[in-house]
Image (cartoon, rainbow, N blue to C red; front, side, top):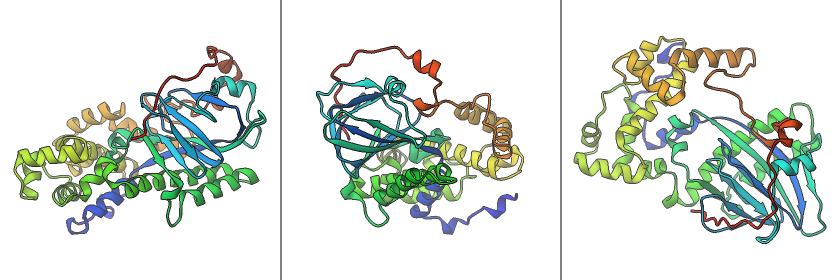
Length: 367
């Protein structure tokens, strides 16, 4: 596949194009773990994982406490919360309700074949759809690296084709359990993640991910567009500042304050993102890819790529091709890990250390 088929001229790129380009570069493997129905009193703790976890409230309400944050927050029907860094968190009907570890709870009350989890205790009912997103190449995507630790989208913020509509379709598919339902819901969940990210920065722009604030700025936005338009250029902070008529120091300070990382860190991040894209989508030599994304040599690109992804460019390309040709998983540095507690074997579930039921004393603040 030829490079030039994908090339875009400088005049085509503006800050809006940059956002589209970054969103399109998000690669997900996502799934809905279960349809949960719980009646009070109930409470469970989800352990720290290496990927984002989400909960969407389909009925009732509950309290969320996230490890590392300060104050609890109450969730209501139609609310979606994503722990973008996979933080440990607790969900319960009341703040004084006892809590069990989720892995232990699933050993006692396993999911049925339809991925339904039903925990009857006789009180008020809460319904949720729960799942996770595995974000591939997260460290090389400037939007994903700037997401807040907790992304909370209230039902009242939805507009147009809302998150509620998307989740209703997913819920109906899971309930029907027809042929291909799991694959369809997985694709729909990918779409839900992008909807959530967009909703997060359109409803509260001042608290948006750093890249969004940068793109909205009259000076930093055009500088970002220039970098994306001419990634093969030998960019320096001075060159970026010159593009928008600012001094080097003023530009560097403003860029870091808005985007959340230094200008050259951003450039390096995006170069590696595009390297991964070209390795997946073309048969061009690594040397050609290096030139296209602004590296002086194949060796320099290979060192940076391996630091970020844990694989050399050649190994990354081979593993990606293998995983898409025969359905096998990437091996070596990219290994499959269990997305959810239901992925664990009965023996693994039994090996989970027991904990006492207790009132969580961690406090959470969503900010």
